[in-house]
Image (cartoon, rainbow, N blue to C red; front, side):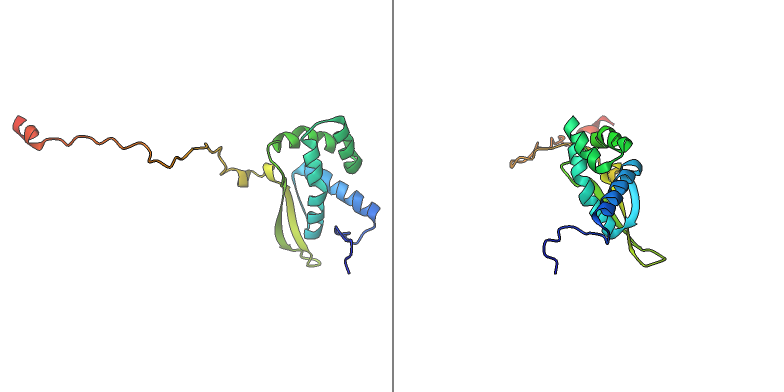
Length: 157
């Protein structure tokens, strides 16, 4: 039975799990993309997304909350300095999980988790769209060029 099981325990005690997720989150902030198992990537996504949301408002209280979970001063500084500036207008969904197949040694399901705004391949096609307003009426009428009189042009020659 799975009564009250809200998150994946990943086969570890709580202290080991929290330390592992904190280290993985620091690596993700530092490298912007890491390879891991799919279960750990999903657990990391739930762990790091609220912290990225907190980093969008740079207050001392938010920094202390994030530091209590990440435990690395450099990672917290980079999160509030660089990552928060890049994801400032995004309302959520800061990470992306891409499945990579199975690991060679033990056939574990592998995935790559990355910060969405740092992937240049996916964001290259995005150009700032102009918001155009469409009305129900027809647009501008095309101006027609008056036909050229062929008799007059033949008489001149």
